[in-house]
Image 1 (spheres, helix red, strand yellow):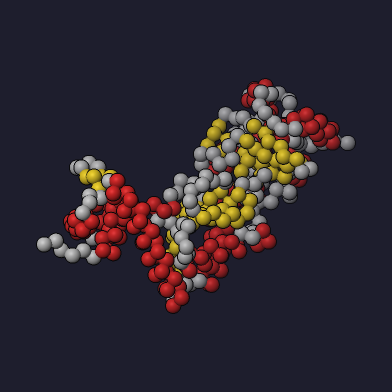
Image 2: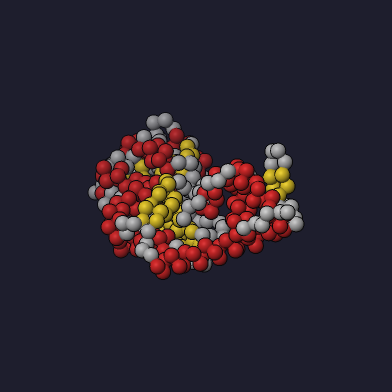
Length: 364
Protein backbone atom coordinates (compact mmCIF):
# COMPACT_ATOMS: atom_id res chain seq x y z
CA UNK A 1 0.00 0.00 0.00
CA UNK A 2 1.39 3.40 -0.98
CA UNK A 3 2.04 5.74 1.94
CA UNK A 4 -0.25 8.76 2.05
CA UNK A 5 1.55 11.87 0.87
CA UNK A 6 1.54 15.26 2.50
CA UNK A 7 0.31 17.11 -0.59
CA UNK A 8 1.62 20.54 0.42
CA UNK A 9 5.06 19.11 1.20
CA UNK A 10 4.99 17.28 -2.11
CA UNK A 11 4.17 20.44 -4.07
CA UNK A 12 6.88 22.45 -2.28
CA UNK A 13 9.48 19.75 -2.91
CA UNK A 14 8.43 19.28 -6.55
CA UNK A 15 8.69 23.01 -7.37
CA UNK A 16 12.10 23.19 -5.69
CA UNK A 17 13.43 20.22 -7.70
CA UNK A 18 12.07 21.75 -10.92
CA UNK A 19 13.71 25.12 -10.20
CA UNK A 20 17.03 23.72 -9.01
CA UNK A 21 17.26 21.16 -11.82
CA UNK A 22 18.06 18.19 -9.63
CA UNK A 23 17.51 16.32 -6.37
CA UNK A 24 20.87 17.19 -4.82
CA UNK A 25 20.55 20.95 -5.23
CA UNK A 26 16.91 20.85 -4.11
CA UNK A 27 17.82 18.86 -0.99
CA UNK A 28 20.47 21.44 -0.09
CA UNK A 29 17.97 24.31 -0.43
CA UNK A 30 15.33 22.41 1.56
CA UNK A 31 17.85 21.37 4.22
CA UNK A 32 16.99 17.68 3.91
CA UNK A 33 18.53 14.54 2.45
CA UNK A 34 18.58 13.56 -1.22
CA UNK A 35 16.91 10.27 -0.36
CA UNK A 36 14.03 12.10 1.33
CA UNK A 37 13.52 14.33 -1.72
CA UNK A 38 13.56 11.29 -4.01
CA UNK A 39 11.00 9.52 -1.81
CA UNK A 40 8.65 12.53 -1.76
CA UNK A 41 8.76 12.91 -5.57
CA UNK A 42 8.15 9.19 -6.09
CA UNK A 43 5.12 9.29 -3.78
CA UNK A 44 3.80 12.39 -5.55
CA UNK A 45 4.12 10.70 -8.96
CA UNK A 46 2.37 7.60 -7.62
CA UNK A 47 -0.41 9.75 -6.19
CA UNK A 48 -0.88 11.62 -9.48
CA UNK A 49 -0.47 8.54 -11.64
CA UNK A 50 1.97 10.37 -13.92
CA UNK A 51 5.70 10.78 -14.31
CA UNK A 52 6.76 14.38 -13.59
CA UNK A 53 10.46 14.16 -14.51
CA UNK A 54 12.47 12.42 -17.22
CA UNK A 55 15.52 11.25 -15.30
CA UNK A 56 18.85 9.90 -16.52
CA UNK A 57 22.17 9.51 -14.74
CA UNK A 58 23.31 12.86 -16.18
CA UNK A 59 20.25 15.04 -16.55
CA UNK A 60 16.72 15.75 -15.42
CA UNK A 61 13.87 17.56 -17.19
CA UNK A 62 10.17 18.06 -16.66
CA UNK A 63 7.84 15.87 -18.67
CA UNK A 64 4.88 17.44 -20.45
CA UNK A 65 2.67 16.57 -17.47
CA UNK A 66 5.35 17.86 -15.13
CA UNK A 67 5.46 21.22 -16.90
CA UNK A 68 1.68 21.62 -16.66
CA UNK A 69 1.73 20.65 -12.99
CA UNK A 70 4.62 23.02 -12.26
CA UNK A 71 2.78 26.04 -13.68
CA UNK A 72 -0.17 25.38 -11.36
CA UNK A 73 2.05 24.61 -8.37
CA UNK A 74 4.01 27.85 -8.50
CA UNK A 75 0.74 29.79 -8.41
CA UNK A 76 -0.38 27.78 -5.39
CA UNK A 77 2.93 28.40 -3.59
CA UNK A 78 2.80 32.12 -4.44
CA UNK A 79 -0.73 32.40 -3.06
CA UNK A 80 0.30 30.59 0.11
CA UNK A 81 3.35 32.80 0.58
CA UNK A 82 1.26 35.93 0.04
CA UNK A 83 -1.28 34.78 2.63
CA UNK A 84 1.38 33.96 5.21
CA UNK A 85 3.22 37.22 4.62
CA UNK A 86 0.03 39.25 4.90
CA UNK A 87 -0.81 37.69 8.29
CA UNK A 88 2.73 38.08 9.62
CA UNK A 89 2.89 41.71 8.55
CA UNK A 90 -0.41 42.42 10.26
CA UNK A 91 0.69 40.88 13.56
CA UNK A 92 4.42 41.61 13.85
CA UNK A 93 7.04 44.33 13.62
CA UNK A 94 9.03 45.01 10.47
CA UNK A 95 12.01 42.68 10.74
CA UNK A 96 14.06 40.12 8.90
CA UNK A 97 16.75 39.97 6.22
CA UNK A 98 16.46 41.72 2.86
CA UNK A 99 18.84 40.73 0.06
CA UNK A 100 19.60 43.51 -2.39
CA UNK A 101 21.95 43.74 -5.39
CA UNK A 102 23.23 47.05 -6.73
CA UNK A 103 26.08 48.66 -8.69
CA UNK A 104 29.05 49.48 -6.48
CA UNK A 105 29.00 53.27 -7.15
CA UNK A 106 25.36 53.48 -6.02
CA UNK A 107 26.07 51.53 -2.85
CA UNK A 108 29.18 53.54 -2.07
CA UNK A 109 27.84 57.02 -2.71
CA UNK A 110 24.12 56.74 -1.96
CA UNK A 111 23.07 53.84 0.23
CA UNK A 112 26.02 53.21 2.57
CA UNK A 113 26.20 56.86 3.76
CA UNK A 114 22.46 56.62 4.56
CA UNK A 115 22.68 53.33 6.51
CA UNK A 116 23.05 54.95 9.97
CA UNK A 117 19.68 56.63 9.48
CA UNK A 118 18.17 53.44 8.05
CA UNK A 119 19.21 51.35 11.05
CA UNK A 120 18.05 54.05 13.43
CA UNK A 121 14.58 53.80 11.89
CA UNK A 122 14.54 50.03 11.28
CA UNK A 123 16.90 48.27 13.71
CA UNK A 124 15.26 44.87 13.16
CA UNK A 125 15.96 44.72 9.41
CA UNK A 126 19.21 43.10 8.29
CA UNK A 127 20.49 44.04 4.83
CA UNK A 128 22.59 41.67 2.77
CA UNK A 129 24.09 43.83 0.04
CA UNK A 130 25.76 42.45 -3.08
CA UNK A 131 27.67 44.80 -5.38
CA UNK A 132 26.88 43.56 -8.87
CA UNK A 133 25.52 45.11 -12.01
CA UNK A 134 23.03 43.87 -14.58
CA UNK A 135 23.94 40.16 -14.49
CA UNK A 136 21.78 39.36 -11.44
CA UNK A 137 18.85 36.96 -11.84
CA UNK A 138 16.69 38.18 -8.96
CA UNK A 139 14.32 35.22 -8.81
CA UNK A 140 16.83 32.43 -9.40
CA UNK A 141 19.45 33.85 -7.01
CA UNK A 142 16.98 34.69 -4.27
CA UNK A 143 17.30 38.49 -4.18
CA UNK A 144 14.44 40.57 -2.83
CA UNK A 145 15.48 43.72 -4.71
CA UNK A 146 17.97 44.92 -7.29
CA UNK A 147 19.07 48.40 -8.30
CA UNK A 148 19.71 48.65 -12.03
CA UNK A 149 21.05 51.44 -14.23
CA UNK A 150 19.99 51.79 -17.86
CA UNK A 151 17.14 50.66 -20.05
CA UNK A 152 15.97 47.12 -19.31
CA UNK A 153 14.18 44.44 -21.37
CA UNK A 154 10.79 43.20 -20.22
CA UNK A 155 11.49 40.57 -17.54
CA UNK A 156 8.14 40.14 -15.83
CA UNK A 157 9.51 41.97 -12.77
CA UNK A 158 8.14 45.17 -11.28
CA UNK A 159 10.30 48.14 -12.28
CA UNK A 160 10.15 51.40 -10.35
CA UNK A 161 12.24 54.19 -11.88
CA UNK A 162 13.75 56.33 -9.14
CA UNK A 163 15.45 59.03 -11.23
CA UNK A 164 17.94 59.56 -14.02
CA UNK A 165 21.54 59.26 -12.95
CA UNK A 166 23.59 62.47 -13.23
CA UNK A 167 26.14 62.06 -16.03
CA UNK A 168 29.46 63.79 -16.66
CA UNK A 169 32.15 63.77 -19.33
CA UNK A 170 35.62 63.78 -17.77
CA UNK A 171 39.32 63.61 -18.55
CA UNK A 172 42.58 63.83 -16.66
CA UNK A 173 44.33 67.25 -16.68
CA UNK A 174 47.37 65.55 -18.23
CA UNK A 175 45.28 64.37 -21.18
CA UNK A 176 43.74 67.82 -21.75
CA UNK A 177 47.11 69.51 -21.55
CA UNK A 178 48.46 67.18 -24.24
CA UNK A 179 45.47 67.06 -26.63
CA UNK A 180 43.33 70.08 -25.78
CA UNK A 181 39.86 70.46 -24.31
CA UNK A 182 36.71 69.72 -26.37
CA UNK A 183 34.37 72.71 -26.48
CA UNK A 184 31.40 71.00 -28.16
CA UNK A 185 30.30 67.35 -28.48
CA UNK A 186 31.54 67.18 -32.10
CA UNK A 187 35.04 68.05 -30.86
CA UNK A 188 35.09 64.56 -29.33
CA UNK A 189 35.77 63.22 -32.83
CA UNK A 190 39.31 64.56 -32.48
CA UNK A 191 39.92 62.70 -29.23
CA UNK A 192 40.49 59.23 -27.90
CA UNK A 193 37.30 58.31 -26.01
CA UNK A 194 37.16 55.38 -23.61
CA UNK A 195 34.09 53.23 -24.22
CA UNK A 196 32.32 51.87 -21.16
CA UNK A 197 29.94 48.92 -21.21
CA UNK A 198 26.89 50.70 -19.79
CA UNK A 199 26.94 53.90 -21.88
CA UNK A 200 28.55 52.45 -24.98
CA UNK A 201 29.70 54.51 -27.97
CA UNK A 202 26.62 56.76 -28.21
CA UNK A 203 27.05 59.77 -25.95
CA UNK A 204 23.99 62.02 -25.65
CA UNK A 205 23.82 65.72 -24.85
CA UNK A 206 21.17 68.43 -24.98
CA UNK A 207 21.65 72.04 -25.97
CA UNK A 208 18.81 74.56 -26.13
CA UNK A 209 16.35 71.67 -25.90
CA UNK A 210 17.87 69.80 -28.85
CA UNK A 211 19.16 66.23 -28.49
CA UNK A 212 22.70 65.69 -29.74
CA UNK A 213 23.99 62.12 -30.19
CA UNK A 214 27.69 61.65 -30.85
CA UNK A 215 29.09 58.29 -31.97
CA UNK A 216 32.52 58.34 -30.34
CA UNK A 217 35.59 56.25 -31.12
CA UNK A 218 38.62 55.17 -29.17
CA UNK A 219 41.25 52.49 -28.72
CA UNK A 220 40.04 51.18 -25.33
CA UNK A 221 36.77 49.51 -24.31
CA UNK A 222 36.07 48.35 -20.74
CA UNK A 223 33.26 46.34 -19.16
CA UNK A 224 34.01 47.44 -15.60
CA UNK A 225 33.29 50.85 -14.08
CA UNK A 226 36.32 50.80 -11.80
CA UNK A 227 38.57 50.06 -14.75
CA UNK A 228 36.96 52.90 -16.69
CA UNK A 229 37.74 55.32 -13.89
CA UNK A 230 41.36 54.19 -13.47
CA UNK A 231 42.02 54.35 -17.22
CA UNK A 232 40.67 57.92 -17.29
CA UNK A 233 42.82 58.96 -14.33
CA UNK A 234 45.84 57.51 -16.15
CA UNK A 235 45.21 59.94 -19.02
CA UNK A 236 44.26 57.32 -21.59
CA UNK A 237 41.29 59.27 -22.91
CA UNK A 238 37.94 60.95 -22.26
CA UNK A 239 35.14 59.09 -20.44
CA UNK A 240 31.40 59.58 -20.07
CA UNK A 241 29.55 57.96 -17.17
CA UNK A 242 27.72 58.51 -13.90
CA UNK A 243 29.06 61.29 -11.72
CA UNK A 244 29.06 58.85 -8.80
CA UNK A 245 31.90 56.96 -10.42
CA UNK A 246 34.15 60.03 -10.62
CA UNK A 247 32.96 61.96 -7.54
CA UNK A 248 36.15 61.76 -5.45
CA UNK A 249 38.45 62.34 -8.42
CA UNK A 250 36.52 65.44 -9.50
CA UNK A 251 36.68 66.82 -5.97
CA UNK A 252 40.42 66.15 -5.72
CA UNK A 253 41.17 67.56 -9.19
CA UNK A 254 42.62 64.33 -10.61
CA UNK A 255 39.77 64.44 -13.14
CA UNK A 256 38.14 67.47 -14.77
CA UNK A 257 34.61 67.75 -16.14
CA UNK A 258 34.22 69.05 -19.69
CA UNK A 259 31.32 70.10 -21.94
CA UNK A 260 29.66 71.63 -18.90
CA UNK A 261 27.52 73.95 -21.04
CA UNK A 262 25.67 70.92 -22.39
CA UNK A 263 23.05 68.95 -20.48
CA UNK A 264 24.17 65.34 -20.45
CA UNK A 265 21.47 62.73 -20.88
CA UNK A 266 21.31 60.49 -17.80
CA UNK A 267 20.40 56.80 -17.63
CA UNK A 268 17.35 55.69 -15.62
CA UNK A 269 18.07 54.16 -12.24
CA UNK A 270 15.36 51.72 -11.17
CA UNK A 271 14.38 49.23 -8.49
CA UNK A 272 13.44 45.73 -9.64
CA UNK A 273 11.51 43.25 -7.53
CA UNK A 274 9.27 40.23 -7.92
CA UNK A 275 5.73 40.81 -9.14
CA UNK A 276 4.02 39.32 -6.10
CA UNK A 277 0.56 40.47 -5.13
CA UNK A 278 1.68 41.05 -1.56
CA UNK A 279 5.16 42.46 -0.93
CA UNK A 280 6.65 41.59 2.49
CA UNK A 281 6.68 44.54 4.86
CA UNK A 282 10.47 44.37 5.27
CA UNK A 283 10.95 44.61 1.48
CA UNK A 284 8.39 47.38 1.12
CA UNK A 285 10.18 49.28 3.89
CA UNK A 286 13.48 49.14 1.96
CA UNK A 287 11.73 50.12 -1.28
CA UNK A 288 10.14 53.15 0.40
CA UNK A 289 13.43 54.15 2.02
CA UNK A 290 15.34 54.01 -1.29
CA UNK A 291 12.57 55.91 -3.05
CA UNK A 292 12.73 58.70 -0.48
CA UNK A 293 16.53 58.63 -0.41
CA UNK A 294 16.81 59.15 -4.15
CA UNK A 295 14.35 61.99 -4.45
CA UNK A 296 16.09 64.84 -6.28
CA UNK A 297 15.84 67.17 -3.30
CA UNK A 298 17.59 64.73 -0.97
CA UNK A 299 20.33 63.31 -3.21
CA UNK A 300 23.87 63.69 -1.88
CA UNK A 301 26.26 65.88 -3.85
CA UNK A 302 28.19 63.55 -6.15
CA UNK A 303 30.82 65.38 -8.10
CA UNK A 304 28.96 68.41 -9.43
CA UNK A 305 30.09 69.30 -12.92
CA UNK A 306 29.58 73.06 -12.98
CA UNK A 307 32.33 74.16 -10.55
CA UNK A 308 34.89 72.05 -12.39
CA UNK A 309 34.38 74.18 -15.50
CA UNK A 310 36.74 76.75 -13.92
CA UNK A 311 39.56 74.22 -14.16
CA UNK A 312 38.61 73.51 -17.78
CA UNK A 313 38.81 77.20 -18.65
CA UNK A 314 42.22 77.48 -17.02
CA UNK A 315 43.57 74.51 -18.98
CA UNK A 316 42.33 75.74 -22.37
CA UNK A 317 43.14 79.43 -21.84
CA UNK A 318 46.17 79.19 -24.08
CA UNK A 319 45.49 79.12 -27.84
CA UNK A 320 47.67 76.02 -28.29
CA UNK A 321 45.26 73.87 -26.23
CA UNK A 322 42.41 73.65 -28.72
CA UNK A 323 41.38 70.59 -30.73
CA UNK A 324 43.00 70.23 -34.15
CA UNK A 325 46.67 70.80 -33.28
CA UNK A 326 49.11 67.95 -33.79
CA UNK A 327 49.34 65.76 -30.64
CA UNK A 328 52.66 64.31 -29.56
CA UNK A 329 51.90 60.71 -30.54
CA UNK A 330 49.35 61.22 -33.31
CA UNK A 331 46.53 59.37 -31.55
CA UNK A 332 44.03 62.22 -31.46
CA UNK A 333 44.89 63.27 -35.04
CA UNK A 334 44.27 59.77 -36.35
CA UNK A 335 40.96 59.57 -34.52
CA UNK A 336 39.93 62.91 -35.99
CA UNK A 337 40.37 61.53 -39.50
CA UNK A 338 38.29 58.43 -38.70
CA UNK A 339 35.75 60.52 -36.83
CA UNK A 340 34.56 62.16 -40.05
CA UNK A 341 32.84 58.87 -40.89
CA UNK A 342 30.88 58.78 -37.66
CA UNK A 343 27.28 59.97 -37.41
CA UNK A 344 25.99 62.90 -35.36
CA UNK A 345 22.68 64.68 -35.13
CA UNK A 346 22.63 68.42 -35.92
CA UNK A 347 26.19 68.27 -37.21
CA UNK A 348 26.16 71.55 -39.15
CA UNK A 349 24.80 73.57 -36.23
CA UNK A 350 27.34 72.01 -33.87
CA UNK A 351 30.23 72.83 -36.17
CA UNK A 352 29.09 76.45 -36.23
CA UNK A 353 28.77 76.41 -32.44
CA UNK A 354 32.27 74.92 -32.17
CA UNK A 355 33.77 77.72 -34.29
CA UNK A 356 31.97 80.36 -32.25
CA UNK A 357 33.02 78.77 -28.95
CA UNK A 358 36.63 78.58 -30.07
CA UNK A 359 36.62 82.27 -30.95
CA UNK A 360 35.08 83.13 -27.59
CA UNK A 361 37.76 81.14 -25.77
CA UNK A 362 40.62 83.18 -27.27
CA UNK A 363 42.36 85.39 -24.69
CA UNK A 364 41.69 89.11 -25.01
